Amino acid sequence: MRSVEITIRTGSSEVVYDLTADCERFLADEGAVDGLLHVWVPHATAGLAVLETGAGSDDDLLTALARLLPRDEAWRHRHGTPGHGRDHVLPAFLPPYATVPVLAGRLALGTWQSICLVDTNVDNPVRKVRFSLLRG
Image (cartoon, rainbow, N blue to C red; front, side):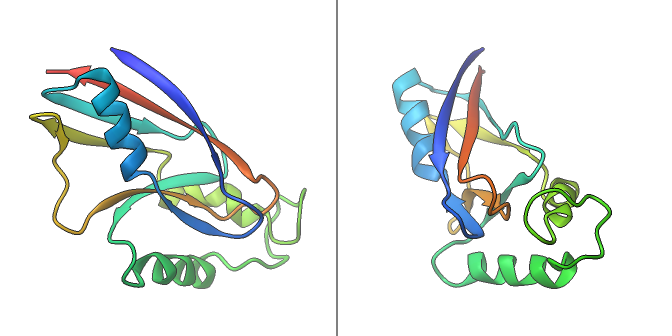
């Protein structure tokens, strides 16, 4: 298995960051043919989602998370900015991992699907993402 870690700067606002091009670059660098790409985010306050981007779905996801997990003072976990406890609950809804088939060197995603880092933690502007390739 081959594995590399990259650094993503997500900034100081909530973001859905499209990792698909980074995934494709990793596969190309590895000369991948068939196998499984595993994407891992080693953070307690970020997750991954496979969804359409660019047509509003990424913003809709952040809106839905804000409604489901409001940034208020109701959270017991209280360090960081107000409402930061919700960021620690996020990975229970959007897991910090995704595994996608690789066929003929390409991600076997649906037509409009992208692999995205979802980061609602405005206290941490830098994230690590690990790509691991299990060859078929």
